[in-house]
Length: 100
Image (cartoon, rainbow, N blue to C red; front, side):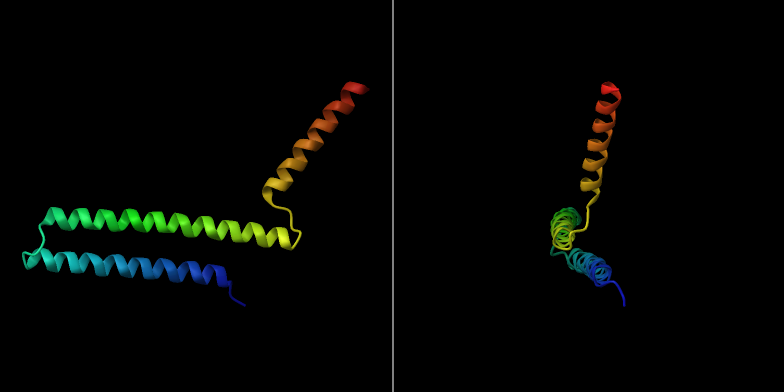
């Protein structure tokens, strides 16, 4: 069975790349027809990229939250859980050495 999360992410990246290419083509055409200046097209594409990055960050955050929730629901330790336990073990070992 293929990983559905990975498939979704790859699909999103493909759509984003296709969308960016199509937007650039549209901007080039508008510049060619004189409806936009090169600077206006450049500014627009920068805005599109910035919004795309912002949206990607939101998607990444949402996916991380969902995965954390899923791990919690399945009672699977997260990296943070393991690190907390390691810190507690080290503290207990240090305390034990001091007492002996």
